[in-house]
Length: 527
View (cartoon, rainbow, N blue to C red):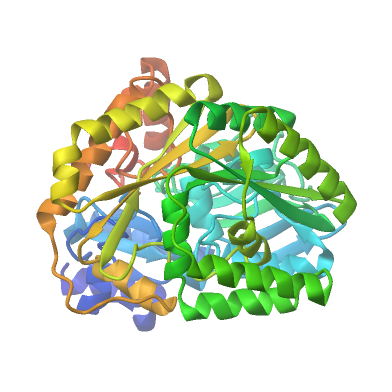
């Protein structure tokens, strides 16, 4: 990047808002899994006007703008294909909670606000977003989660992040500021998503290709007075998927997850001291009797000492209600569903920790010290879930020799998504050096990063090949994805009418193709 272009960027935002430091630019070219070349610059806008100014410079100087939130992604959504021309837009300086409306049940927040910050701000009002956020909500920004269409807390009943969005304020590649839903109606409050065609949906799950989100309006609901969790275990996948389908259709659970018991045991033992202290603080300040909270703490301590209990899946079902008795009644009915399918009752202490501290330190972006971690995921209807799992297991079996040679562990996470779908998430862990970006994030969260771990590019390439093969196999049976980025195919899978519509919308919003080219299968660069 020339000095003249850097000067233009600094004139638009100020010298202190454009990062040209080599280390910062290098980290901006990476995510948890992918390592690209350093970007040309990093911008830290503070308001909508500064984002508009950045777009103007990008159009004049033929730059590419790559937005990033918390950064804990593994799909290269913010890893530019054209780093020499890329300016990464770090949205974490735009954190304001513009409005909380307790009566009309909406909030308007800037895109760099984290889910943890919003949860804390809503707590005095006894309100929450139906989709509460991803597990990484301590770091994950709301704008990033909406752009990636994140899943987790609340997904079992309320769907993905996008389904809790009422409206979006976005700066497009033409420099226009667009507001959608009733956020964009001059004489209305931002309380309703649908007023004419659903323009809000355009800017969800777009990986930043259709514009830079600067603010999001979210619907709220009253926070349930009581929450609880019940846990089961099984090694029978047919029984497990039958149970996930039954609980999904039943609709009582706010969240259902099934975690490989080996991974669950490993994660508990690997939890750093900071996370344990945070959990105990949450426990001490939690609801319920002191005796009950002490017993819960002892159960968690025992879980951290025991070895992983063999093979199979630990299944955790989260419920909510007006009273503890209502939660208990729901858990009794769910327990009957589990028993009818042969699932056994299991220790809920790990899930209790998540209940008490949903947004703990983000140390799960690595395995044990000296191990890397990366997942791949597939969303399937219940009718295809077992077929999808069989396809995953077939890929693992075919690659068994290489998996053993590289010391790769394959673990699994399953979760319901609304009433009709399930997410399959194979995870790969292997001895290798983390990307510097992942190292930085892990250290900041109290995780352990050994200094003497050698990089193993052949192992990384083998894992990348496993992910690619799984994507090809499961997409062939109809799997879908969130957080598409540059990892999951998008346009090639659309019918021609839908693909043409997407291209036309993008061209109208971003005539110079400055917005994150390469993501969602857009061309890497235009002539």
